[in-house]
Length: 114
Picture 1 (cartoon, rainbow, N blue to C red):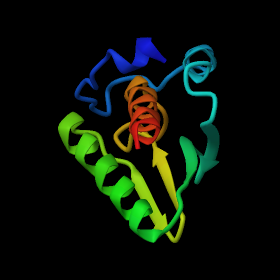
Picture 2 (tube, helix red, strand yellow):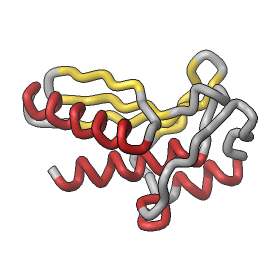
Picture 3 (tube, helix red, strand yellow):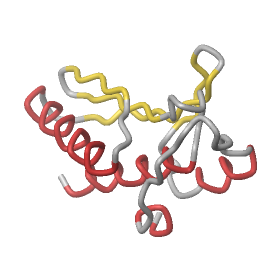
Picture 4 (cartoon, rainbow, N blue to C red):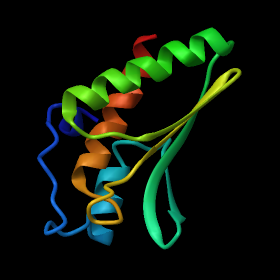
């Protein structure tokens, strides 16, 4: 995961290509707990984090929000009692970009540091 963790998101416009199948497989090895899902015809990265209670889930949600703001790349977040579902994808291209994998790795690190 070090490779992704050392990188920063790049500004993404609709003109950038989505990640290729080969890139997705390569990046996925660094974030094995994430699932590639298809929603409305778009590929997304999604992971459910288990936490001990709602307060912990809310605190984790806020930490994810802070790194999202710092990187200028924002996920969908679902906060529930004892769990947070984080979904990354790049809206501008309607699918996965390298940035999504960077942010997934950074999200994992946040969780690990709790």
